[in-house]
Length: 390
Ligand SMILES: Nc1ncnc2c1ncn2[C@@H]1O[C@H](COP(=O)(O)OP(=O)(O)OP(=O)(O)O)[C@@H](O)[C@H]1O
Image (cartoon, helix red, strand yellow):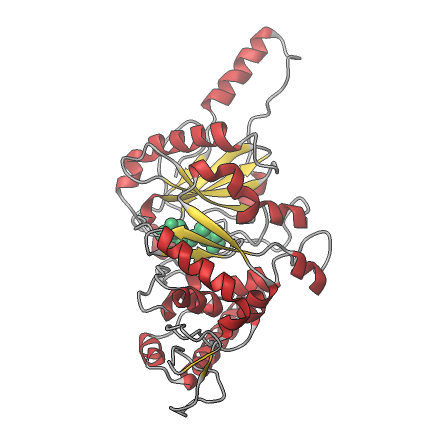
């Protein structure tokens, strides 16, 4: 972590940053949220984003995603309406247990979309990482045979999307807590939902970074993966400079809002920066190694215009030249200090044996999985309430 005062010194932070309840955020509008939707920004930044295709989603497909239970289309789709092939990991159909009964194919209602998804997977080399407008199903990898977001078939994608709380949030709560009011159903329907399929790349999580922009100034950068990577400390200045140049050249004057966050990937040899995602300047965005209070109040040099005397202009320039975004990395002992020793998204995960059993195709396991996740959520909520009461 550097101090943001021109030094490049990593310092340990002993306790997790505190998240106060009342934060001085500027109002977040639906437009701010929409500006961070993949379909809004991707056309402008296509050349600096890893290869991706966007598939507009019809209401029938969205209804399928919103439905309870997971029924997957049969793998062999010669007869699109009904098939004897039982494809569902969890068969929610009424015929469960009846070997001879035909299996319902939900894709009948969005056949074209299913076919486009198949074609795009093929076009992108056979393996994709899926995502909705704002969220990837990172919390649902426990249910995938690969234990990752790598998808080779449409069914791999449906299984992840339908199991993800993050995706559900995109579908049902995208505009919660915005200044222009509660979303009603008709507005939700008019949201241009897209499935984003990104060509699968084996990503090195150590060189993924989250960057924070306030008033069109890059003020802070940190790791996305909350583990210690010693080699990053030697590269801190180079990484900061690459990200700053990338921001200045590609994003600063083109992103529609003055406040936002963006995620980048800088694979070896660490000289090219790739844009991964944007997130709104809002509480819903995880500030990772910062607290929102820090980000909202962090001092930055004020750039004045021509009114100062020549001498004072010079000293102001010096301040601006010296100033640089604060770059936080995790030191060797930080993960435990931050409480990061527990894996990310643990509240959304399940014990290994439950996952293994669920792959066996028992419908009951899905129910148990949901109950387990609910219990985890409640105990986390209780923990938060207890610590608030302390
Ligand atoms: N093309 C890809 N191939 C493989 N993995 C990828 C690809 N693109 C992104 N990822 C992985 O997926 C993760 C999640 O992607 P992304 O940041 O777009 O999701 P998100 O839901 O918006 O995350 P957050 O809520 O933290 O912003 C990334 O951190 C990266 O590790």
